[in-house]
Length: 114
Image (cartoon, one colour):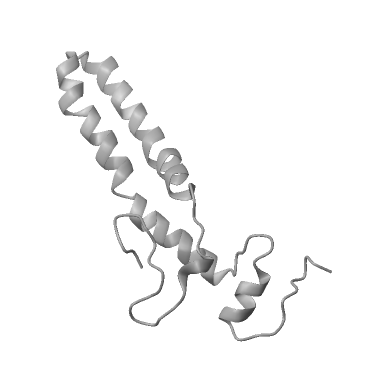
């Protein structure tokens, strides 16, 4: 599904699915920040309040926890968003023709165009 760390490949190597429909944009970063970074920030603030460590302790503990905690889930979240877009046939305005060509249908109008 990916050609590099977060770049979606043009086509699937196994089933030859065209990934041009996929547009997760900033979704992975949003979910990573809201679901992971926000609770981790509370943990880091708790460490500061409870133990009052020197700044270098935060440098070696808090910074890596935040970096790895937010960066590692980006790829699975992006894969989940691409799969969700495919399953739900999510599309941007004006891409009905692309969906029709991808699925071998001549119907280029959606229910929203009526």
